Length: 538
Image (cartoon, rainbow, N blue to C red; front, side, top):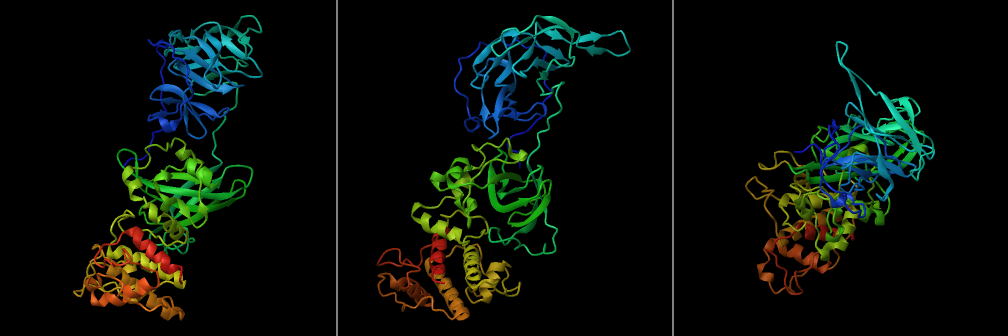
């Protein structure tokens, strides 16, 4: 299991030689990170300046924007690129070793003709401040002094001048002691001797820990946006600004495979309301165990609108992928990267294809499926089945118990834990206690066995009878009959009443106008739609 999708390394860059045998390339448009598969490294700690900052992409200097896209303004021409100031950034030509300046399109505005200073591996050039930049007349290596017990290094004496943004000299060359104050230099690691350190502080800092509140023993903490059958955790959120921060944020927690792709994911939403410099704890429940152990990846998102959602989330919405995880009772949710922990996150390749396929919903089921999801009728199911996969007895028990509890507004009582020899699932024990399900007659339940249409119809009808008794409301008023089905002889005697009642009340129709197909298996999405139709009547 990988700890991160793209490693953030603090590289120790050496500069023994700046000349590389390649010619400058013609300048195309900048390339976005979503189109690239690369190792991204940051050398030194520096903020985004004018929306960009230098990073190493497969050992080549490029830029990253604040949306974590890689912008290639280098195009194979430079051995170094530097931060932008006043719209221009210093670069060093990889063939000549000379310093020039580019704009944010990558065009060379001031030809590469000046020198630089190499101080023990850190390469210094001038940057623009108040319309001018210091330039060095030639290459100045560090001066080595071997007269003492240990070698020492100094910058020596340089010839420097200033240029304006056209590249014209604004004064004459003069001798200075290297690295003296007022030269306004920047190193390839982002260090600026004449400027105070600019710490790149995130406005919001998130961390996930185990939940320590008084109700930690009850995993159903939080509101209807959390899953109720998992362990309890909390998100610790700190406001690192002088202003209040309010808004809804989401946490996507992921398990990754050896290729760094997420193979399982879950999302939770939190309404953040923080005073300046305040820290708060927001509890939630997850079906993932050991979520705070360090083996999970977290992606933080800010909620916006549907258009931004479609542009930003890491799923293929055209293929109906991941709707269960990214749509909740609050409506469509949009993603915009907020946290340092996911600054290097790239949408391409994040989620394994198997996970995306697992979350696809058939086109004919999409409308009702989305409506069921908004109503909270799709809990986390054991073994995380694909929606197009045949549903098991345990998974259907989880669906029907979730619906019944929502309809009645209360938690169902459980049968004793030793009711069945092969399962102690809370949903199965609740459904058994309510008379919704029965076992196999030998003390087992066979939770992993797939179920069929007549079995599901019977379980739904028993749930209807239970809810009618609890509410004194008739949910299936029409008289039931299976006479319209040409395959009625295939319906088991014990299932006739349930199949007929559900068909007559438009909860579970036949597979055609004349066939019930009682022995046919039922998929997860079909089961969800059946229960959605029942919920409409509650």
